[in-house]
Amino acid sequence: KSSEMAPTPSAVSLTLGPCPENPPDLIGPLLVEFDFGRTWEHVRKEVSPLLQKGGRFKPKDCVAKQKVAIIIPFRNRHEHLKHWLYYLHPILKRQLVDYGVYVINQDGEGVFNRAKLMNAGYVEALKEYDYDCFLFSDVDLVPLNDRNLYRCFDNPRHLAIGMDKFNFDLPYKTFFGGVASLYKHQYLKINGFPNTYWGWGGEDDDIYKRIVLRGMQVSRPDLLTGRYRMIKHQRDAHNDPNPKNPDKLFQTHWTMNADGINSLKYTVKNIEKDILYTFITVDIGSPE
Ligand code: UDH
Image 1 (cartoon, helix red, strand yellow):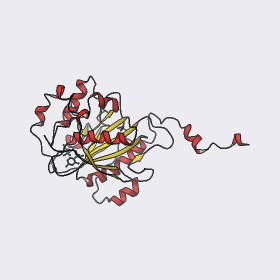
Image 2 (spheres, rainbow, N blue to C red; image 1 turned 45 degrees about the vertical axis):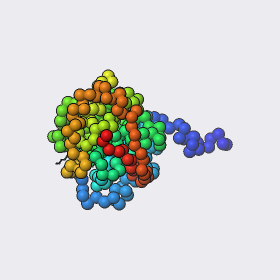
Image 3 (cartoon, protein in one colour; image 1 turned 180 degrees about the vertical axis):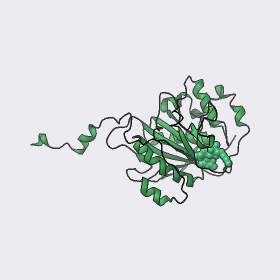
Image 4 (cartoon, rainbow, N blue to C red; image 1 turned 120 degrees about the vertical axis):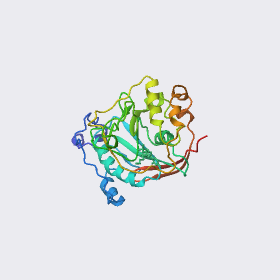
């Protein structure tokens, strides 16, 4: 009798319920060690299962509430990327998010521009999927607690509040560096991020100001949940502190209207789809 037959696979997927608010497989505090004997081969073998090409994942037994694009500003940090992928993919799978990992690689040897790369990542990720949440992460930061959820909240979220290099505490109250998430509508409300902070420093404070100037607050996990380990490194070439950047922060209230996602210009040089990530090389130009 056909009416008693088992439902077809497509019928099953139609009846999947929403993913639980508190993912059941979370562990809490994690052991994180940057073992320099770790090879790409090992990482690939460990974390590739269940991933789709381009570093994409979807929970198979429930429907995730958010579609999260994870954007990593990048140049010449492959060693760090290897560790980041090794730790983050398993955490993100346990957190039951529908996500994709986008490594936004700055082309050439010009001055680095972290915030502009993140803007380019926002645009490129949206070309691929209907993401509603954008999570921006430095390549050298790994959370020490998987209850620090990589998703979006009622207010823009700062996740990397307790880095080991700052003694697991906020270095200052308005700090917004390292890892942060914004819903698409929150990101658009602040006109995205500034494109004009070349070299090191200031862009994260500019983003914080944009959020407050648009009437939002910053959401954070508690200090124990928000612990991070940073991979120790020397300052990169072409990313020296730019003495012009701090002064720009006095102007954010008016520069933010014309400097952001509405003024972003860059060109895509290459897109590589690995199983672990989507690697997008962009030419973002140089300071005016
Ligand atoms: N980034 C790159 N390549 C670069 C520069 C920056 O990938 O050449 C990205 C990467 O995601 C990095 C992020 O931008 O995590 C932030 O840059 P950063 O790590 O240089 O900034 P941070 O404040 O360190 O973490 C500043 C230099 C500290 C030197 C300390 C020497 N003891």
